Image (cartoon, rainbow over all chains, first blue to last red; front, side, top):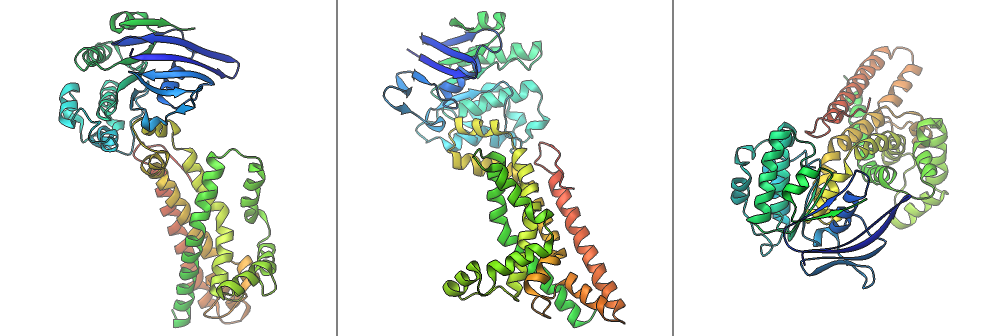
Length: 207
Length: 231
C-alpha cells in the first residue's frame, strides 16, 4: 500500500474525515474547494495534527494516535509541492533547489542537482531570483526542490491552478513522468475533473 | 569644535551603542513574542513595552532612580553581585537610553517579523528543516532588514535621549553629559550660543542619517520586494 490514511479532524465547525488505502501511482483527492483537501495533505506532511487516526505511507507509520506516534514534518520525508510554489524569496533558484538536498542525509538523496534540472528543464534558471520566474517556471522549480529533498512520496496541492493552459500541459507531462519513470507515490489534490482523469491512478471523492 | 565637544560626541556615541546592544536581544525577544505568541496578558505586555513612549521621561528616570539607586532592589543586586553602580555613570545613561529606545525597536522589529510568510517556514519544515533551522535559514533572513532598521532607529532615539537620562544620571562632564544634556547646559549660560549651534547641528546630522539608513533598510524587506516602513 502506498497511502494508508484514516484520520479525523475538527476545524472550526467543519469536520474533516478520510478513510483511504491506495496502491502505487497517483492518488487524487477530488472535491470542491473547502472540502478539506489541503488539510488532509497538511496532516500527511505533519503540518496539521489529526484529532485521531493513523497515517502510513509505503509501510512506514507517520502518525498513529493510538500508538502515540507523530513524526515531525522534517522526519516524514514528504516532497510537498504547494499551490503557490512557496519558493524562498531570499534565495536564488539554485539555493532553493538545494535547500532540502543539503538537509537530507546522503543515503536519502536519490537525485542530483544536474539530474533534477535536466528532468525539469530548469538549468537556465539556476541563477535567477524566484520573483523573476513565470508561474510555470516557479512551479517546476518547486517540484525540483521537493524531488531533491529525497522524498519517499510527493504531496501536490493543486499544482496547476495558477497556470495558463500551455503551462498546465507542460507540468502535467512532468507529473506523469514522476509517476511513471520515478515511480514515486503521489497524493494529489485537485478540483479539476479533467486534470484528475488524466493523471490519477485512483480517485477519491471528498466533500 | 573644542576637545570638550568632541568628548561629548564620543560619549554620546558610546552611550548609544551600548544602549542598542543592551536592547537588541530584549527587543527581538519581545517583538517575536508579540508577533507570534498567543498567551494571556499579551495586551498588558504590549502596553508595558510601549509605556516609555508615552510616560513623561522624567517619570521613567525617577523610576530608574528608585530601582537602580543605592537602596533600590535592582541597584543593590547589581552592587552586591557584580560590584556595578549605574547611578551617575555613563552605563546608567545607556540603561536610560535603552529603555527609552525599547518601544521603537520592538515596533519596527515586530512589523518585520509579522511580514514574514509563515507558510515559507512550513515549506522549510517539509524539506527537512527543524524548527530552529527553519528560523535561522528562512524567518531570520527575511526579517533581517526590519531588525536592522529597528536597531538603527533605537540608536537614533538613544542619541536624542534627555529627560530620563538627566533625571537618573544627572549632568556630569565626561561621564553622563551627552549631546542633548550639553546643549541644555550651554543654553543656561550666556555666550555659549556657538557651542549650542555646533552640537545641535551634529545632533540633527546623526539623527537624520540614522533615520534615513533605517528607512532604507526597512524598504529592503528582502528581495521579494515587499515594502516595509518605520517612518
